[in-house]
Length: 255
Image (tube, rainbow, N blue to C red):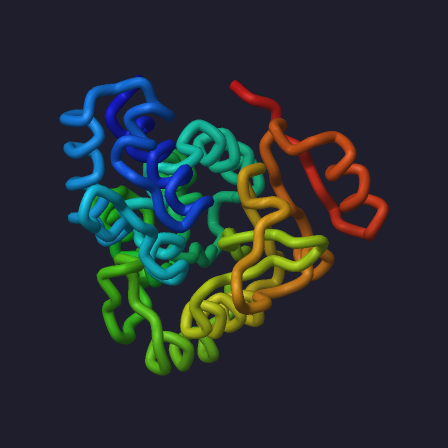
């Protein structure tokens, strides 16, 4: 098991419980105290965990759910599958807007294969991957830079979005509960809503681990998207319920 996968499992374990003893983690994961301490040190450095005396606790939800570095390590295989499915929805000559999600970020290395293309984004991570792409016009939305998201948000970003119109929005959300797409940070919600309003067609990418979870703020109902893409790990019963509720859901098979 890779170090990133092990750290993700440790983070998930602690987040679910709120706090865990180091000895408990040693027993749960069957590794040495030195290994646990090394992973805990890295998670603390990333701002996901807090070290206590002989224990570790989760940071407040807004931190660990939003931190770009942490999100980038989660459900990587599912995000890759969803990105490839989303790529098939993009046509040459279109103007598209991509949000700051790590799911949309997985699209970046695939986009130079579609020419010409105009890409609008608030994600610095995504933009940095596209600066040398040929026949790709890149528009980076301004605003206040937030290192937590590695993206620009705030009033300037929202105002810029009010002045453009694009063919397609591709975005994600922190969680899905029922048919509600949810986001933890209200500032991020406002930017995503502005992107939603600027697009003629809207696609939501959601990996199966986010279903049945909760975040604080409503972004949009799933029925407000022209297409919702989810990976095949989503239980069949959940998929049927969403389709019955009027969601245009497409399950993307694993590669």
